[in-house]
Image (spheres, rainbow over the protein chains, first blue to last red):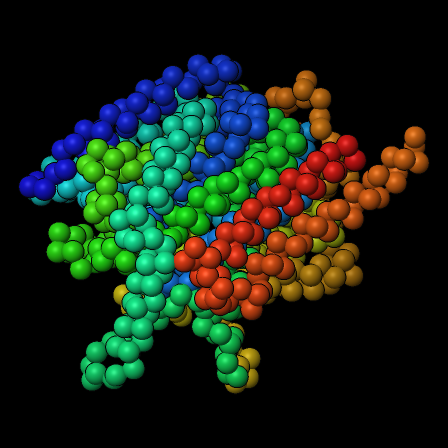
Length: 560
Length: 70
């Protein structure tokens, strides 16, 4: 406990206290009956353009993103920049597809994507599979938000030793932060993160705008920053050129992507497939869909598809922090040696802030990151709770719960999910959380045929979708399993080097798995239709996907 | 009146094709995998993709306004 940054810590705690109060007040904001699931879990489907912008922005651009993207640039260079095309193309896709999901969900009272699948294909099994995939992909994602808080706390100098009641004392601040989060999510539901998102986003915008002006001024401008990064690239290249016996080669680093050769697609394939696969997966995550369904009209979603790129611009600026950290030489600063050892490249942004900002502003910046972790963690736990309640509890335990019971089950489930994530990061460690989150992205994309294609056509057969999903899950998991990295033997990367004869095409395993999934689904659909295997009832009509239901439709229960 | 609505609906459908542009521009790295030309000290690779964040938002916004009544 020797190096606590007191000024920064005081500001940090004050801002944290402010959002805690906001979180509890949120219950009374545009008050609704919080004993109904769509009120607690979707904010009453009442959010307009501005609130949805803050909520989705806070929900999609997580604290972990803000740390991990520059960390990837810091470690690998241009390859880490794929997050930018990813968030560019996500929005035209949202613009086209998500209003359809919103309309059909509003019409039939669907709260989760699995509700839609249940109604569309008349299959509770397929809905269960979609719900489980969502929960499974979300849990490690929440755990990574905790990792974001952990890194920031470590950067503030909060290191405890010893243990209390068998728990390592070092995790105590994290546990306290999480108990607070759990309490106001429980009482206020989706209104809490929506309100907190406002503060979080203001803090993030201020931090980033200050950082992109102040830090380049200290380092001699963007020319100097990229110049330093280029020197770094040459240094690593010459290190790797000389083969030292026994020494591991440094990971490749470049300011642009490695171009294709006669034998390989180079870094191009991975860059594009990661961008495309991640963009298609983004709005399959339960927390994204929760954010979409909470908006009050189709036009809110469409407007936000044009307005949310403001966050993408922010993200691209944040990505450049990775190069600033290289130019500032943070990794050779002995003051940060211990944290770099513990957190690796993830520590590059906190280190950059500590080195460049006065203490009080470090407090603001770190609060922005920590609060930035709370918003998505809250929405994710709510989304997972909605899935559990609607598609597992209601389907398999209690057929017709009262509205109050349903909301209560969801509230309790949100607690279980959050503490599950907390347990996860403390007991299993950060490396496992990172591996699982990487797998989560691969898994969630396998629900694409059931959800997204289902919004356009009922052509695909429910059993074919189920088997296709299983094939995609197995393929993607296996592909990731076979990939080692410098620190782990398995699940080291989500990029799979596909061999086509003597040609290698490295690409995002999620997308390769989706291709397998789609081929299996289409072929089996044709076969199942030929043998006339019954294809479940479709609750929806073609017009349900296009309409803007009248306001009195709000709150109509699900029809199953 | 009816004919006008039909025609506008038809034109609106074609407008949606504009949304493909961001995909083509960003998913084909040969378009931008270069250090030069620099702009304010920033390599082409980076400012090109920054630019497309803005262009893509403008395209989406344009499609929104032109298809709003369709």
